[in-house]
Image (cartoon, rainbow, N blue to C red; front, side, top):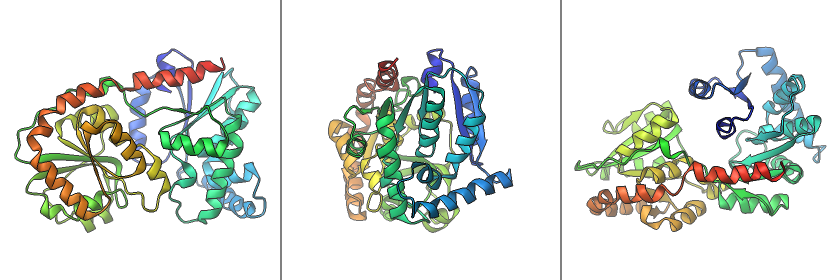
Length: 382
């Protein structure tokens, strides 16, 4: 979206208000890119009858897909209530001469495809995660996995182009879709969002971890479970919206841990230059997607010049093997975390002295360079 706007293309963005804190951050983008036409659909219960209708259609579709297992329409509607909501909006949208429709989530894939056929336009899909391998909650896992696989198998071969956010996701999507032309586009950020790292002189090494939400199952338990043995040598800062139950269970008694509210993306990226070490501690024992995904946080740490402590997911091992001077791999257990962190503290001076070297090396990796791949995909069928 931003790339297209910066190239002076006429852009219409359609998204969803979900009623969370991130809605206000979206408004900052409006000010930054005023030329974009923004259309937001309400995914909250504010318009109750609308919400109820799409929710009931979602539930009904799930039941029907157990009978009509090959139906693309029902699989899309059963995957997310937002699919039909978007489809309804697109049917009412004033038709413009759109050259390209780009979908970014599985919930928007089917609707975007149908709209592209209607207006005789190309469409592309950006696979941020390997959706069939994501952890599935509160519904029949096998049925939902089948629906997601069916959508990708049937619709991706019809796309003008497909991009993914990690090499291992690319391999899985190529196997699933039968395509061999999928481009990996890392979610690196603009160079302008990062500043030269600060050289700290504190006794303690400064650790940072960030996400939209601070809650269970994100790997923080690996650090917090051994924090009493680390706190004398490390300072930990968590950035995000804290889950109260997680706070009460894991953090309440650790008054030394700093918790900061979410920042805008540019503010966040500038702020992390103040830390020594970034924690990329995902756990993948029950989430296949996490084995494959490269998170935004590990890329942000990398670009900021931080030393990275990354858990041994296959994707992170692959990434760190390509940038071995930028951090260390830790196993997904408390013993390994404790040992690695103690070893890291013994290398405190070396880690801090090389922060500028890491930062300057990372200047070769940025959205400016990755966006060239996107432009190539856009222009291929122009």
